[in-house]
Image (spheres, rainbow, N blue to C red):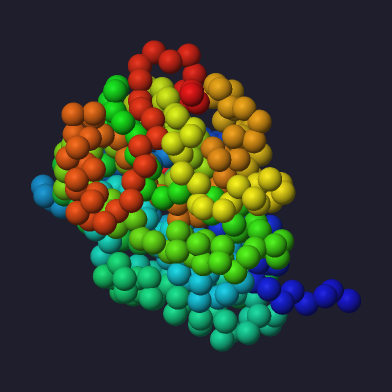
Length: 346
Ligand SMILES: Nc1ncnc2c1ncn2[C@@H]1O[C@H](COP(=O)(O)OP(=O)(O)OP(=O)(O)O)[C@@H](O)[C@H]1O
Ligand SMILES: [Mg+2]
């Protein structure tokens, strides 16, 4: 007889954004289906540049942002699963520079095997994060299925001229990151029941922190490009930014922040299998990565930080603004022209 699964993470193979379809396979699916062919001129941002959300212009000074994100449990506690999933979904609106306005929930639940009360906790967690973001959870759609899955479709608004795509970086721009890396490592430690309690709280604090700074930065033309770091890891999302702007990125690996204490897990080879999947997808575009550095670069993040491109002349303004907003940032490198590789680690 099948042993009952008692922990939510036992229901997921690749948890959180780690269960995203690999970039090459996604490309294959989207190209074969003709999904990249979009002709509506009001669709200001579609999926051709793998941006964070779709943006549709409805009037001269108003565009609507829409994004959808869902995944299998990344943590065992249903309330926390709902919180992380919601923060992750809302992040794509912030990454476009926008302001979220309301969300709908996507819920799949094996109602015969996991108590519906736990699904209610997932929704409660999501609602608490929506409240923090100043939006309502307006509705949703729920199915009974084999795997527990939760996510949100989030709507936002933005002035059409304020949109921050992932392709606007300019040569010489400095690259900033707003959250330390390591959510994938900690989620794997949790799944393998190796995580220390204090580190579970670090996982929660990092993943549940809203990327609302993105909505603030939408108002500033000094910010040339923005995206959030999720399932494809720092390297994958950096490559999207660099390729989108026909530039290369030089990254100073020592400056890339790690969540405090996670090196010990990495030393014990506790990290997601999809770290290697990301590395296999991106290594031909990358130079200078040694040994286990790839974990730092390819750890799949769920609700990771924002990557932001700013010209060096605006660095002081940017750092002052971040201080006022109480937003930690790390400068990790710069965009350059003429590199032989898309990303060079120095
Ligand atoms: N099933 C699909 N149909 C059409 N386009 C898709 C589909 N799945 C993904 N895409 C598009 O592929 C691109 C990359 O998607 P991806 O989910 O990686 O972006 P994302 O929403 O920024 O991710 P994350 O939520 O992890 O930040 C986006 O432009 C997205 O719209
Ligand atoms: Mg994104």
